[in-house]
Image (cartoon, rainbow, N blue to C red; front, top):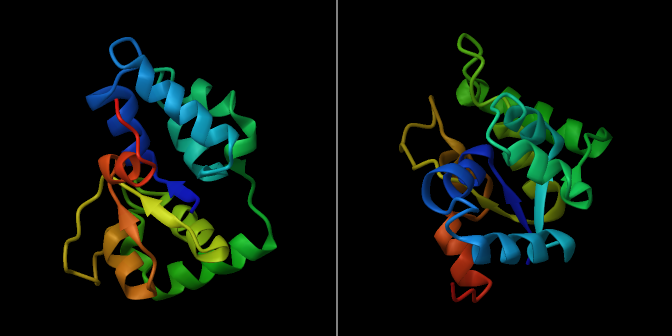
Length: 153
């Protein structure tokens, strides 16, 4: 089953827990998942990653097949998600801008979301897992993704 990865999960892997210089095997597997179409990224996530100079943006950009451009179907889902969950994006701080796109991609293609965000249980100020739960979309963390693909690193 393919996956839609959030900026937070990608950065958890890239910067925080599995940096490429220490865990090249993780990135060999991520490369394979991207090439096989198992790992997808909404174009807005690529844009979020461009704000940091840590190599993550370039890695995703170099795997162009995994980047899904905004189209009318995704736009429709993003509009519906934002209408229903307007506080998903922090418009004052400009944070979480990619979140509705990650969820919209999963919704449009019946994917599982990979995120580092935790459930809040507060749908009025939701995080990705809260919205996914409400919409019947699976969400897991990066290690859950590794496990589901059977990676032994």
